[in-house]
Image (tube, rainbow over all chains, first blue to last red; front, side, top):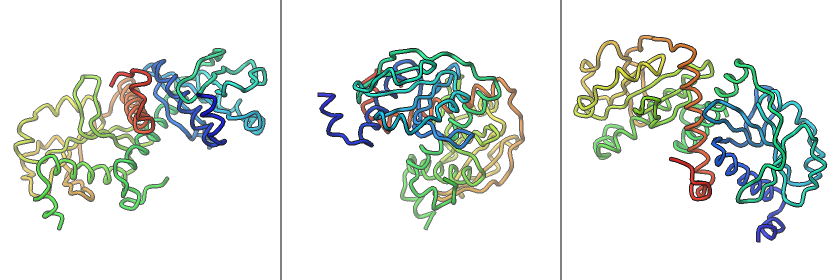
Length: 158
Length: 158
């Protein structure tokens, strides 16, 4: 049933389903997450998450081998998190994923950690900056949902 | 027209309108805000906001004199922010507001600062804790909106 859901979902749909599953798995582990999180470098992480100890996880979701091969920018993400994972679907050839990254296998309902990520702890200043950036991004998005006229009213930058 | 909107809004409606105006005014000043923000003490601030320097503002919204008189807990909020404001409607008697608090006058569309708040800078550890708490609260709420089945799926605490 889940695989069937995947086959009929299209590429963007598959990424959305995997992302939903990844976020649920992170929530189960005590992490709140945000999608499409823009780092200070300008690059956007598919999923960034933080727990109540301020520990940061970044997960890049790859819906296909082509999608994975098109993006070799993942080493840059490690500078903004304590642990970095790729998340792929059940039929993705796991041995393509570099051994120095964590690996999750996801579906639309959850995800399991196939391989833990090595921990490269952020320094205090970087952690502080990433957590602040998460607070700003999440609160800003929530405010726009709660007050749909906000941008028109105050001309906030995106 | 705005006053008319107030007269027909009821008590909860008035608070919501004032809150909307306050949040827009904060956004104009570079602060992203969150409503009903639970502090580490357990108390809930009506509006908490942070800017990209990590500076924290708390605003308590008072829809009426009775509402203001019923809550004399505001000194506790100052331990969690750099600046503390009350926000009231245009017909609220401003001289009731303690002089050691900032004062905004709001309507449903915005707010103006009638009196700036004295700045009592948070220490680094408290600031870090408040910003992390904002990130967790905002990301968690956003996730629940984006995945309405989340709580059922993972049994997250509210």
